[in-house]
Image 1 (cartoon, rainbow, N blue to C red):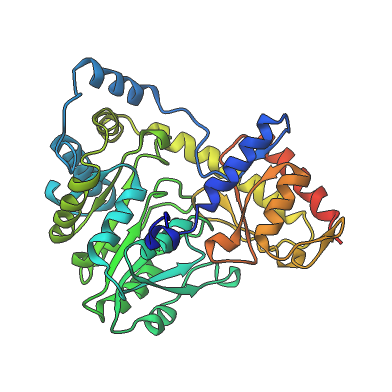
Image 2 (tube, one colour):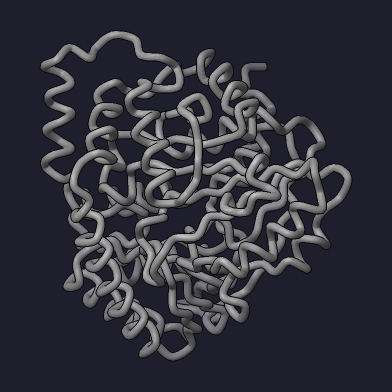
Length: 397
């Protein structure tokens, strides 16, 4: 019988990409859909970065590169870590990949085996739990609701650790919630990690620069656990370079070497052109980051204000990233034209079909009572979108 492998059959499709695809299909049919489902800046890549990519082609950077990326790029990343984060990494601790997504997956495939447990705070980014499955590991989901700003506590982390625990995945600023762990909160988690010497922390910091509370804090800053922390980052969000596909990790040497070995067997290096563009991003002027960050902050304020006007939505104040993740449990169980909303995935589909606004139900993020709206689009579109959402929700009885 011809069929896909058990490994693939166990995976769920990406709900964020699925909703974006459904939105595109409706648009092709002439429906005026506002897409708030995709986590992608609506800005263009800054010109100096694009010019570096063009120059790389003209300078014939078209041959195989080292699997982990050009030394010049890894040095630039090490410089960024030192200057911005106060962290010392050598180029051989850095591995560049085809987006931060591959970097996360590389680490999990390199350190997780059948039966190993990975602690995943929920709400979580949709791909984390699927990557753990792919590695043969077991997800141990620790839930933090809106009442605790979607952030787990040290006590929750301690309670989740078992002799089989191998890794903790942390994301701050967070996708999907926009929550940001403070230094004090990270210190509390680090103290728990320090008590468990076999526990690795995978710290996804891709939204580092989209931060509304000031200085970014990394859990890698704590000396007692630094040798067990893998930082995940990249250029997609900070420099509006999602399509360039350039992410990276900064890791203990043994993990970096393992990921280098793994990546060498299934993709080799990321695109040379993207690498040279990323190098220019890190070495060039940084004012573009602040320009975009301020725009996202204005949009955050607008979205929070508009969402709070909608009866039934519970709204927190995101401290980073570009997502609003309201609790919509007041609408679960209601109906429209005889069709009942059973969960947040149903609600997202209802908003798409009836309100023509694409979002993503929280079910995919491990938070079935919430829904994710991306505000990485213009203020005019956000205003119209939330007007449509309000009207559609009012029609549920």
